[in-house]
Image 1 (cartoon, rainbow, N blue to C red):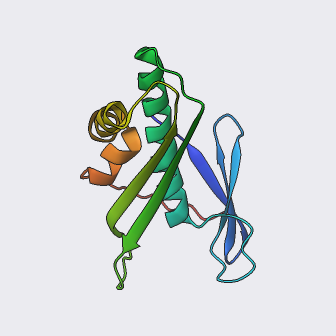
Image 2 (spheres, rainbow, N blue to C red):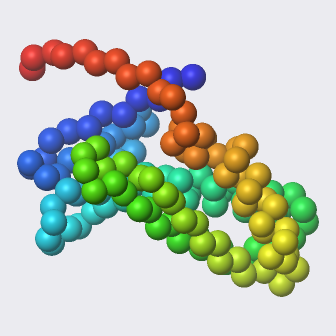
Length: 135
C-alpha cells in the first residue's frame, strides 16, 4: 500500500501538504507568529492521533465508556543536526465512568507497541529514494 502527499511552497518557512484525497495541512517553520505546526510537531501529533484512535477503539471493544481522552506528547530532540527525537513521553488522560488505569495502560501499550503505524515508523529502518525534476 502506498501513500502520496504533495508539499507546496508558500514562503521560505511556510508550506502546504495535500494528500491524494485533497485534504490539506499547513506547515509552519517560523520562529515567531506561527499559525501552524512545524514538521516535528506534526510528528508528535501524528503519533498521538494514531495511538488515540487505537486506544479508543480497544476501550470500546471492552464495552467501556469513553467520555474524554487526551494524549499529551512531549519530545526531546538532539541539539545537533539532524535534530530528531531521542525521547518521546506520552501522558494519557482518560475520562471514563467504568474503565480504569490498568485497562488504559494495557491498551495504550498494545497500541504503541503493536498497532500504531506511526510509532512503528519511528522505530523503522526506512529506505529513502529521491528523484529530481526541474519544473
